Image 1 (cartoon, rainbow, N blue to C red):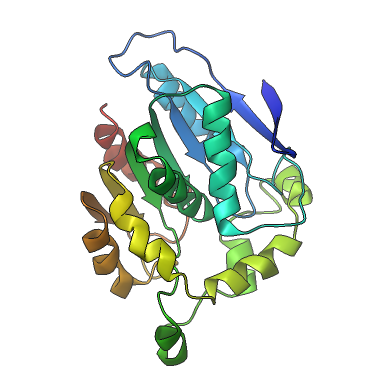
Image 2: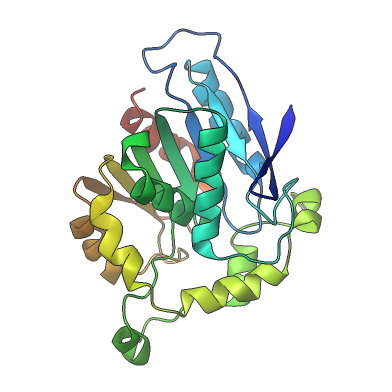
Length: 252
C-alpha cells in the first residue's frame, strides 16, 4: 500500500512492507531502496520482495518529481537526500541500510554524510560522480551524460508508461546542469561517511567515470567497488549478479 506524507511541505509517497514474516537478526534494521532519475519505487519490486522474504522490513519511496510524490519548484541533488532523511525521521528509524541507484545513489550518500550514525550499510549503484573543481571542468575530456542518456538509462515508456507520465521532465535539464557544476563540498565530506560502503559500477554503458572511483574509495573510510559488464541499471539488467553482490553485504 502506498502512503503519502508531507515533509516540510513536500508530499512524498512511499511503500513500507512492515515487519517481515520471517525472523532475522537484522529484522529491526529496515532497508531503504531508492530509485534513479526518471523511474519510481517499482524498479525495486523484485529485489524488495526478496529482502522481505529474507526477513527484512523494506521501505521504498518515490523521490520528489517521480511516481506518486509531488512535483516541486526545486530539484537540487541535496534536496533529494534531505527528503530521505526527513522520511527516516518521520518513521522514527534509528538504524537503516540504504541502497540507491544513480540519482538515488547521490541521495543516500547525502543521508550517510549528514547522519552517519543512522546508516548501518550503504550501497551506491551507478551514481554519476560529480566534478570536483573548476579546473577539472575546464580540462575534462570524459564526456558527461547527455539529456537523452539520463532519460533512457533510467526508464522505458513501453515497460513503465505510468512512471514516465508521472515524471517531472523539467528535472532532466536541471540535473544535467548540476552534473556540469563542480561539487567539491560533496567530495570533501565523503570522509564523514562511517558506514561500510559498496559502490557498484556498470561497464561501457554505465555513467560512472572510472578515473574518479579511486578518489571515492580513498574518500570513504570503508569502501568496496564491484564492476559489472552491463550498463547503467545493474539491478534491472543483471538482477542475479546484483543480488549476489548486495545481499551478503547487507548480511544475507
